[in-house]
Length: 195
Image (cartoon, rainbow, N blue to C red):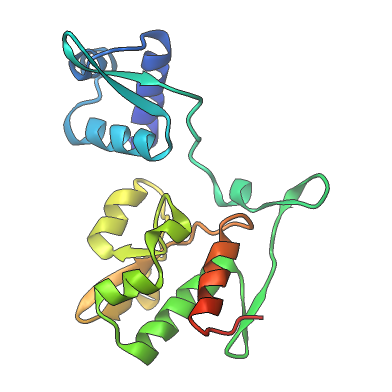
């Protein structure tokens, strides 16, 4: 069972039976252990899971319609007065080369690592997770693979991996017209020129 399928089961159950215990959720849905923990983490990150204290311990409810697993196409729909059905294929120039949104971020991070030789902590300070709340700009390989679930949410191919002080990091590929401006602003603050 994928995290997405497990999430859908848990959400469906909690919509019908709010204020349920973890044991009741697990028993009714068949979602257990680490998978249930991942579902709770995902729903909490989306702001969809509400936790309260009851006589039986912690109780869980859905606070709002959770954000569905976005596909890159959905994330990259453009708003130009009205919704477009196509992808936003805007290109950016960096170091004389043209890149789409995700590849641009990957290349900027790669170049930053090459030029500055930062520690993981310094790199996280340069490109904090807040720039892409759900996935972070980059994560160490093990963390990235556990966050992404069944679909690649990071550039995982060997040629896209970046080494930082002997550790492998993966850059997120989940950039949209709404999330990229914060990254571009941070690049400007760091003196990185992107056209």
